[in-house]
Image (cartoon, rainbow, N blue to C red):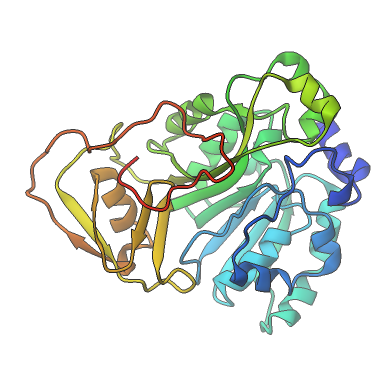
Length: 349
C-alpha cells in the first residue's frame, strides 16, 4: 500500500484541489499568528497541502522539532518561524515529488524569515523506519505530524520510534483521522479511500492502546471535529462508519498513572506564553485561564511540571496523600458528533 500512497501524493495529486474528500485538507479556524506565518510561505508549497489540523502547540521558541510526513514542508516552514532562528525543524517524507518542492525552498524561506542560515532540513524516509535515518535517539523536543500516520502500514512502529526520538518530557503533537469502529479490509485495500485518509484511519480505542504500548500512557485529546467527506460515492462506501479529525498530545513522561488520580494539587497559569496570554489549552478538558487556581490530577501536574511548560505555571502542592480518583475522570467515547465540540473549561479528563 505504501507504493500506492506514494503514487497518489506524488503523481495523482497535483494540488489540494485534486483531493476527492475533505478528510485530508482543512485550514478552518486558524489563529491570526498562524495565518501571518502562512503568508510568508511560498505559494507552491502551500498549493500541495494535505493536512487535517493545526500542529503548532504552545511555547515553541528554540525547540528542535521533527515533522513526520512533512510533504512539501508547509508545516515545517510555519514551525520554522515559531521556533525562531535558534530552533530547528527536520521534515521526513517518502515521496520524491513532495520533497523536491520542500528542499527547493529551504534558502528562500531562510531569506524570507531574515535568518542567517536555514533552520529547516528534509530527509527521505519512511515514518515506520525512522531508526534507519541519521536521527539521534532522545534528540527532539517535539514530534508533529499532520494527517499522515493514518497512511502508515505500521502505526505501532511510528509511535514506538517517536518515543525513542523524544527527549524526556518531550511531546508528540499531531492531527489525524480516526473512526468510531474498525475499518473493513475492503476499505483498507481501496487505494483511493486509503489515499483520502479514510482507509487507514484508526479506530480511536485501538489508537489509545497502541499509544500506551509505546509508552505514552495518558494520551490527551486536544480537539476534534466530525468529517463530512463531501463525496456521495465514497460516503456510500464507508457507511455506517463515522470519521473524525482529531489532534492528540502524547507526553514522554515516566510514571504516569493509568487513571487520573487526585492528590489535591492545583496550578495557576501565569499567562506568559506568547499568543496564549489569556488561556492555556493542555487538552479538550483543560482550558486553564490566566490567574485562576485550577485543580489538576497527578498526571496533569506532571505534564505541566516536568515539561517545557513548567516556567509558565505556579504549582500548588496538595496534602501529600492520595484522595482517590479525580472527580469527573473518564469518558467512553472521546469524540463529539457536533461541529462545535471543544470544551471551553473543565476539569481533568
